[in-house]
Image 1 (cartoon, rainbow, N blue to C red):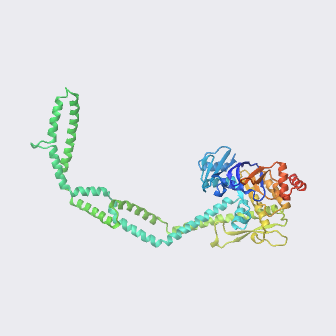
Image 2 (image 1 turned 135 degrees about the horizontal axis):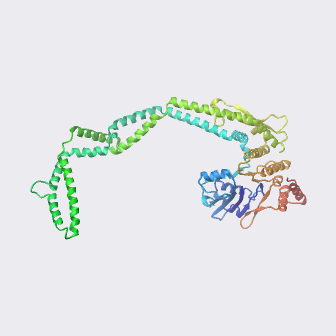
Length: 558
């Protein structure tokens, strides 16, 4: 439920805070006064696109605040949980700011929120029905969706649509695979050939191969270097070596250990060095005295290095990078080889088609069962609206199998007749603008009243849906909206005094021509409401007669 709407530097409104009542709220005012501004502001707060022209002339930005009571609103609580946001137990505040440079920002309970998020949340809070709603009646899709909502089978309709989409996706995938089968086979052969060429390199660590090849190619020189190094460290000749000199140093330090701790520390380090040099000498000795490598091993390494160089030139990549690239080839090959065959896809497509047919049959049966009762409800509501002879009927026309779609097997059309003895025909052929307007209103009201009564309902906004009606018909429309307002919050713009008289709260929009034109929002007292209803009924000059008429309209409110 909307508690308040605050506007700051928004279009013709400098600053205003409007409290919105429970039940049926009505907005009236002369043409051009700015009645639609409230709807524009509310639309912005539920994620609609902004226009910099909405910023009041001379201001840098406009701010709109919408405060909602969401006590026990499970769907809103679920939205907050899904979006990992904190929800106050009772209220939420939406702020939308528009800059004169065309930019806009939005906040939810003080935290930034994207327009995409705001739009999904807004759909749970407010449902706006524009004055063009009757045009939607001329679209077959609207009629089908309305019937599903009235029959409370929208979830089944959505499941059927999803099933059809899955079938379509499988078909597109099969067509795609079939269209590129030749290219697929060529790619598989190329990848297999490339991987076959490089397979010897993939079986080894090429870095280690390069290192081993480098060492074995220079093994004799390396063995000689090892001998020379060993000779310097430890030898049996008269030439001084490291071990002999180190032994002398150790002897000197050991002799002075009792005199100075420093000599003791040095002695320990020299003994450790002696041990490490002994181990190093052993390694050099083993290396210098090893057998020469098997020529076949060197030949094997030569072959791998030559292959690496050849493939590197062929693919214009360093050998090690080429090996990494080959891993990608392997993944591509596995993907291509694992694509389902035409037989497997054909079976999946048939299975998806049968699942869709089953759901579509169930959906059509439920639609056909509900249609007569839905028509009866529609006619019962239309007849008091100056359409005493209204009749309607849903006509189901089977499609060819090739024309089945996400909505099912049948084209569904709503036929209508407002006159005795005249055949029912599609709405767009016979219904007048006033008839369409009344039907649109009734269909919207029926859809709302037919929904789950225990679920939290969004606020309903009607933008001049009573256009084209007057007199007693307008009275009935007003009563219809007031009745709806007993269980749900409504906001409606109207030019009809009979409709406005039925409101629980009457909001007047007035334009003042000061230094800068400004619109003002006024919640009317009962006497002020009499004057406004008199203006709406009698025109510019308000007389006692028009006031009496206005009072009679208010006295008729139940």
